[in-house]
Image 1 (spheres, rainbow, N blue to C red):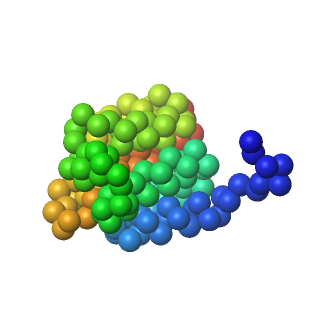
Image 2: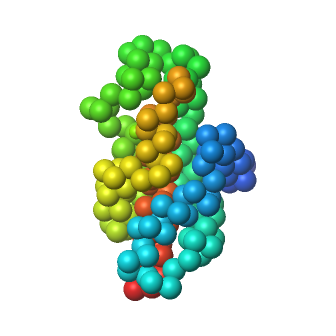
Length: 166
Ligand code: MG
């Protein structure tokens, strides 16, 4: 049971996620660029700067941080070979039928409603920009979860912007 004195570590969770993303070259600006490309046809006045500000807001949401922490930690553990089998091999080989990476991503994409989910589906298909680079990285680093995390955050930000201008 939750201790009555437990204070949720929001700041530590934010630092965990942004540090793990930055280590793989993912900044709020990179995520903002994906969002911009998703929303510019619906919001012609949109700027990358506004997308970046909204990305920062979304990156402070607990639902985003909780799912992203689990996802990014699984990539880290798989890269280090520290998961028990068969999970180690499943995650290290990015098996398409695993689906937990997309499941966590959907939890994130959904925080501003179904627009985020449809945007995530689109981003996952076209694998835009930095997502394509993560998906095809052959350096031995496991990127099974991070591509979905980035796509889901970009999609959630796009949904937030869509609601703001509706
Ligand atoms: Mg994936």
